[in-house]
Image 1 (cartoon, rainbow, N blue to C red):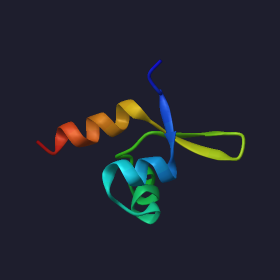
Image 2 (spheres, rainbow, N blue to C red):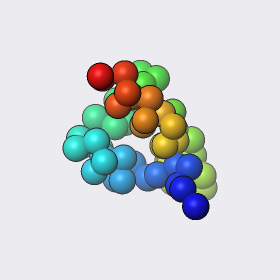
Image 3 (cartoon, helix red, strand yellow):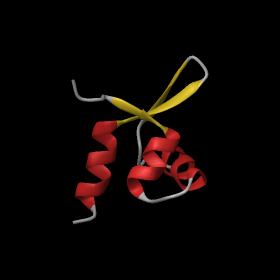
Image 4 (cartoon, rainbow, N blue to C red):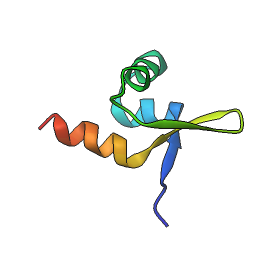
Length: 55
């Protein structure tokens, strides 16, 4: 089964960016994230949209 959301660290690794950049993208609306307990997870669909918009 495909992952629907990933951690901040996994998002940073996938995009080749730092954690601070990922949090900035969440804050300005470029990435969709949500809290699950104490963890912040980023929706895979928003990561795909971000990458596709760069083409």
